[in-house]
Amino acid sequence: MLRSGTHLARIFAKPQPDGSFEAQVYVRLTREPEVAETYIPAGVYASEAEAWDAAENRAKRAIQEHEF
Image 1: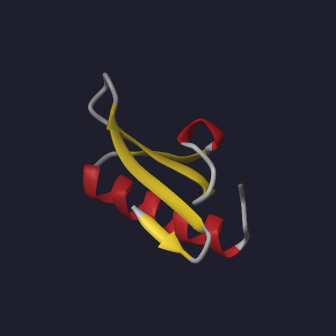
Image 2: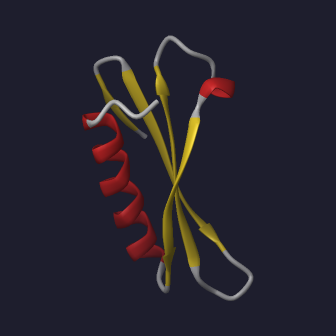
């Protein structure tokens, strides 16, 4: 989970049936409930480590650009 001021981003590397991993980001204002999150897909990767890195980078960008 990443937090910057009033923004919060949760990141995931979700396993896929084919053995790949989908990088997922959910971003919202900290004062909003989880139901108000914005889902941002961050791609599908061959390894879990790549997916985590991609999700973290995308979350940082989302927070910086105030995507919520």
